[in-house]
Length: 299
Ligand SMILES: [Cu+2]
Image 1 (cartoon, rainbow, N blue to C red):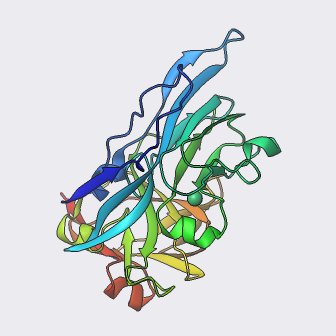
Image 2 (cartoon, rainbow, N blue to C red):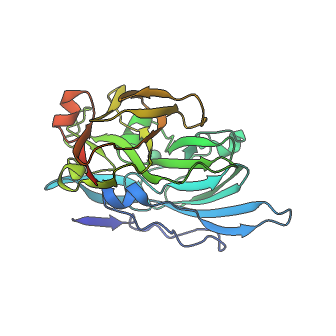
Image 3 (cartoon, rainbow, N blue to C red):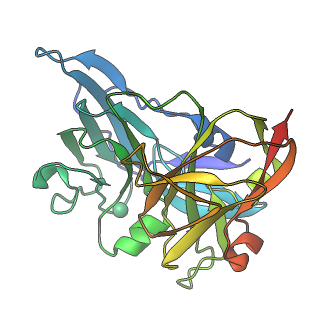
């Protein structure tokens, strides 16, 4: 799969010297599914866990459907960007370097000071900014660029997932990160392509292997621009739905969830029967334009 990253000409990396190398190599949707970026881990003097990340905004050409190239803006080379994984109470520090020709930021959802919100401190090309906050509260959060026009900066690919684990960990499971998105390939203000993790029909051609009876946990978020909602429908099964991932009790039992732009949910399920089961947007148009895939459940 073609995948070309270029830093804007004349942009000199200007990161603080203590910034770690970006530790994110996931590119294909299947890699993004199971890649978790725990950062460079150390201990602060008081005993608090410090997780340090380097995010570089890049101009990256990505293949969003067979033979369809898209001039994306990325964090560290992929759409969606790195999946930040930490635990409630951890100190998270993100060294952000803008290697593109446009100003950008990182706006993280969650509780943090205004100066860490990625709205007012616009980062010009070639400049850097350091975000630092305590992960609070636990749950599932999106992050994205918050530079005007915001829909352009999101649609171009500057977004990703942050999982803040609860202090008492969730039950072990086969965990999958799924980001629902779209791409406006002809610049008409509408999406021509819909995907999970960046490539249309990818999980149709590369089904996700599961095991009968094994607990599956999907961290699902909706970063689709232009269309107000997206959805996830599971075949041959029901899932427990924990909206925003901020609870582990009293789930709703359903087989379809609708998420507004920026909304997210944790889904848990086990397959009772082996075989191939479809999952897809329940908006038929989105499914037909690439947002569909299969679980291949083995006995
Ligand atoms: Cu931006």
